Image (tube, rainbow, N blue to C red):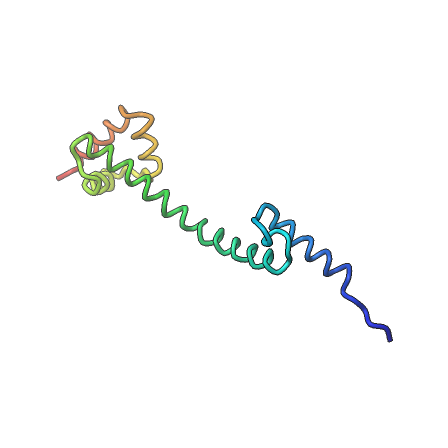
Length: 118
């Protein structure tokens, strides 16, 4: 029985992997083994950083709201606690957008928070 070489399937698999690695530098885009390693590592980074991005943005929203509160003479933690007591359920992203784009509405939120403070 003649020996069968893994021609078509292997070539297709290699082409698929090299296409994913196109744009990488040097042998990472030209040779199969370094390309495969680079694509796998890139996938690990992408998976990790999709979650890290959520943390980073939450920190940015907190920073923006904190800066807006400081400008109005109120600490971030007291502001958030007062909002909770006043039953105002706005997330940090929306609060940061309001603080940037509608300062008058943020002033009203701060006033409501101050009135809810014991």
